[in-house]
Image 1 (cartoon, helix red, strand yellow):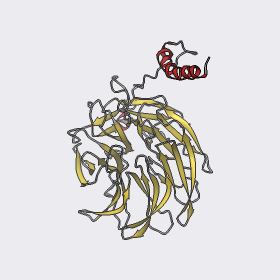
Image 2: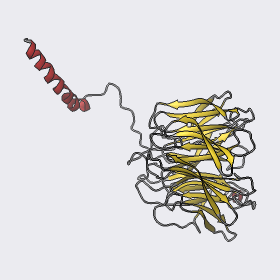
Image 3: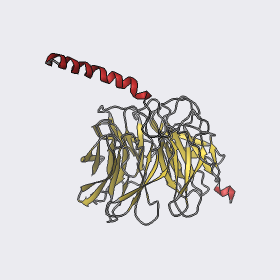
Image 4: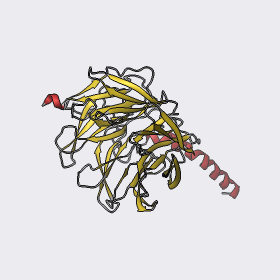
Length: 433
């Protein structure tokens, strides 16, 4: 065959073969049996412990965007309140329980551009709680310099705004700790950004001034829980990074404001969907473990539960070694919290789902994991609505001494139905007794 003809034949083959492959491959028999398609939409047995959703006084309109809820005694009167971040109203609210069984909402702070998280702490040492707000600037993916950390000084009848960090990308979390042992509170900061982000610690210089120190450059940092993870007497920082290779990091406090970075875990599953990080001594062995809810796929307009979604427990084994175990398979898991819900002396968990299969009736939006004391967990379903849950907190909100559950919804994906805003799930354990 002449050389010119051989070249022509080769060029034609290169053009035709991909087309033939595209047409023929789907109809060829598989080399092995096809794996079962993951259907998602899982439901669980109904909880033997009754949780009643309280709605009176919690009415809403529109499509709520609650990004964070917490249960704490904000005003120091001995009774817990709920602090909620509302990204649709760009505000921070406090919900207080009234003796008549209703809830009163008080807006504490306004004009915060998409708050991701609020941190209530006495930053200036004057005996009351100030509020530090992690500001995203945009609830949707954005790499713009639109993030901030704003500190609201509590002056009794008003909160005075101090901007303590700007010129950064979207900020998802701020947590306090005295990292340099100088007697005041510094701050750990998660700059989520989108394709670019970082972990910082802010050194408190007094008078609401802070110096920023960089610990890690990585996109998608969500939470930075602070604890003494290596049990050496000082405060360390942990962080979950959710973009690119999803990674769990520890920052060991070496003293005098210096840290050593430890990559504790990573996965090549770029779709795992790390959604947060919770510190807790889950096995109550005296050290601090980490809990990772996974199921964030908000970047997918047709988000759907996946078999690798659920909740992962990272058991602290000492020496900055954390052993991973999957303890739940709830599709679309977006948040977790810990508490002794059945009052049996061990720690249970509450999980909520953002993107379960909401077109399938009965799929779980709120579950609790009952701990048998040996860290074997049974999943019990509390509710299948509201849907689009993204935040939860455990604590006694009605003053009966029994931990209840608070949840919040963020309605940015279809279906726009079975809506909720802030929901309170009263624990029926006291009545059961």
